[in-house]
Amino acid sequence: MRSAILDRFVQKVAQIVQTDGAACFSLGVADNRLHPQAVMSRRDGITRDSLGHVDVDSKDEFAAAVRNALSQRGPVVLTEPTAIDEITVDPPLLVMPIVWEREPLESEEEPVQRTVGVLTLWGKRGGQYDEDDYKLAETLSSQAAALLVEEQLDEFDDIQAAFSTVPVGLMLVAPNDEILVANAAAMKVIGTDPLQGLDIQAVDYGNQLTELVDEARNGGEGSATASYVSRNNENYSASAQLTQEGQIIVAFTQSPFSTAAEELTGQVAHELRTPLTVIQGNLQTIDAMIEGGIHPEDREIIEEFIGTALIQSARMFRLIAETLNISRIHAGKELELEVEEFDLVEALNQILEELADYLMGHELDVQVPEELVIEGDRGKIVSIFDNFLKNAAKYSDTGTTITVRIYDYDDENVAIEVTDEGIGIPPDALDKIGREAGFRTDISKKQAGGIGLGMVYTRRVTEAHGGRMEIESEVGKGSTFRAIIPRRQED
Image 1 (cartoon, rainbow, N blue to C red):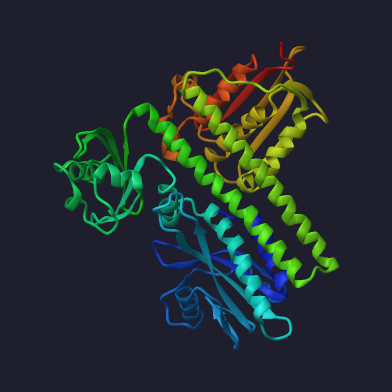
Image 2 (image 1 turned 90 degrees about the vertical axis):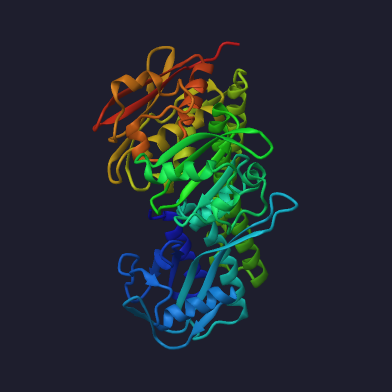
């Protein structure tokens, strides 16, 4: 997925370090190749599409420089014209590893450091890089790490990072049955610490895991579920899911209902890390620029980095609030509304700015009045926009149109409406969407991942305001999700 944020980031890197070109590569875990994510070149017209994938194990000079940079976790400079894939760039060329770091979540846990890509700069004005350039490139690469982690949600590094944040027990098993990743909760269930690097048969109590993994791998469905009894005689529900790479993800939970909540918690925790790291990277970059002396032309860059940090902090606040509210739903409690008067159009603009990168692959048709003031819980109603728009993007192809409408439904109610040109929903499933926790249609499961709680929350928010949610859909043609909300709230 192409990222507008990465494109803009690479432009700023070249501007700050004063180079003719810059490129950000992600490092593929499965193939050990560099994949171009964003490229900026002032003179020679190099683009992201013109650069191919780079095999890190190849014998060419650029690949060797990448290996050196990765092994020493530091910059490597080439002083001769160098070929990247089949395109030659001007010297000097700087290769800086992009390393994602996370502090331990628990006292006994080790810090996590994973190389997720490479930042490359070429054509330095003045002919050489100095220590200030190295320091600045290192700071910028930290910010790039946050962006790449967000882009590579299906990569092994992100799975390992997410595993450590989720209270449910999780293991990643290789095709040869070696345990690649296991979090603390899984070690507690299995009764072995550490699990990483062990063969699954070596820690299998009563041959339970071997049978579960075998069914997921060879049963034809790609998944399997069974009860699991630990060595301490505790009962768990164990599920196994086959990935496209032939790996198996094994999850242990103590109740089916809590599974969705725990998955949501892990999903939200993963999303929270990205805005937090972007904020940190922006502030580190500004700090480095201040230390080096601020020039008049730096004002635009600093204002942009501060603006991005503010947007991401608002996103963090909303994610945390949404998670707490879903916890209330699971506990059987009513949602509490913080009613205020606000402009619905302004609230939509906020979420469109937050989701600009997420929605950039689709055409947006926004049909709204100049202003539409209502009473309600602004933060929760923003979540309606958020879930409707993410749902539309997730279940429709790139290049299709997503239509967003806000309008007066009648004299007393307003409507929030999002229409996509996606996969659609079968008629017999329409009444279940948003009513049954964890419900997803077979069509949606094939299209994208998810746990089916977003629409449950959206329906509850709508009904808490005294409104109702409507869905119109036709399989293969698209869907319309509509929240009808009273303009005014009763005391």
